[in-house]
Length: 388
Ligand SMILES: [Zn+2]
Image (cartoon, helix red, strand yellow):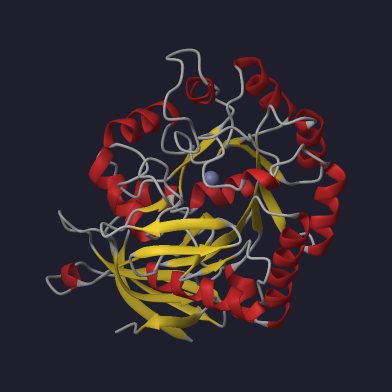
């Protein structure tokens, strides 16, 4: 039996949380005192559905190995993330197949990794080839939607692909969306410049999410209608937002939150594989990117188009509070509960009988750039920090 004492992230109530093995046994309310007011907060671990790698490792690297997967996933624990979807962006069939196979193998042989990776996110390759919409995805590997290709990739992944981002205007996309949805894979709209009726058809076919809404878009678009309004207006679509302080201005985050509501906004860091790298130009087969001194990561040679973020989900939680005035509980739930519900994974929870995935952190203060994580518990094991 292990335990910790902290204040609940949602109510501030002091509690003793105990767990046996990997499962929470009890969450017992305690009397509030002067001492308990100084206790850190406890929340369920965060879950991020879109993470591209870390410290030079890209999950879409054609040479991805299980060791690289471990090295790229582990740092997220220190950000309070106990589950994430490794995300593979547009690449050759061989690269995607190899990457998914490496992630599958890594999960098969390493327990903590399997606990952290409930599924993978395939972002592409069935997206728009148009500059801006395509973002940092390599144009030469963008291709028409192919259910046959996806099935081969899903086989290589051992069924781990649970989320796919595609453009509704990609050839054969509508048929693909129906088949993917029927197979239990959640389809998200992204890297698109689709027309109104194409977006509507995609949602009719089963699409349920907009990937990093407002990004992966052209710098200049028609004022209305356009693919951002169309996705905002469809209540059947949840939206993932990159609230790292760089990808979306505060006013846009506030508007998108008001339209979608706290239950349909999913916070993601969309961290680049270059996150955690020193400033400078970094490159691989996927293309060149530049890590700027201010932490932004851009497609090399320009400053307008970002190539994923350089920060983690812990930053997005704090920025969301600062940008919109939501409560800590709402921001934390947007960084876990909403995505887990959409993808059909167990919800992050501070309830008995659920998995002991816990993050211990200090209450955010004005001016904080990210959560001050003290400790992270994954399936009952303290992986980061100490509990006292
Ligand atoms: Zn993207």
